[in-house]
Length: 195
Image: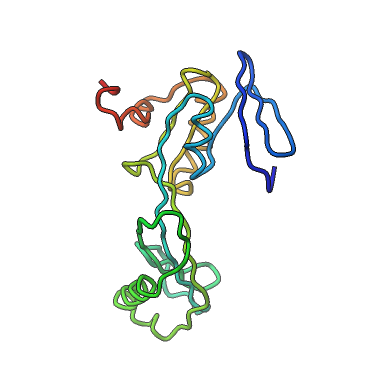
């Protein structure tokens, strides 16, 4: 539910009880896919999933005629004609403030690539947090302790949307483990456990 966070997950032999501050829900299957809160909630059902925040910053220009038909690393023209500029990676914890130096570097780089950008006004900027695993690859995991509880995390939900809407559904609902899926188990971060 909007504006409610999970406070507690209780596990039984046939379902999960999820409690927020004001409501509780029961489910036969549980999918934990909640960004930077994944570590905390996965622990409640016997899973160890490590994620860390990484800040990225973006600049947005005013609208202009279409001149750029394909996205590149750090530059994309939206359908409305505005440009989104940015490709920064900062280990700053949970800080989502923008920084002048990083935004300046983004603008300078974009103008070197596409000089006509220097004539456009900047409309806004923002910073947001990516959710990363230690190797920046996805984690797909089902709890050994509480089967039916799953954890999923990846920083590129857009790029992986097609797999998330097909293969993951088969894995969770039909219990068919996709070929090669074990490579995305978090035991890869512990060499002794992976052997």
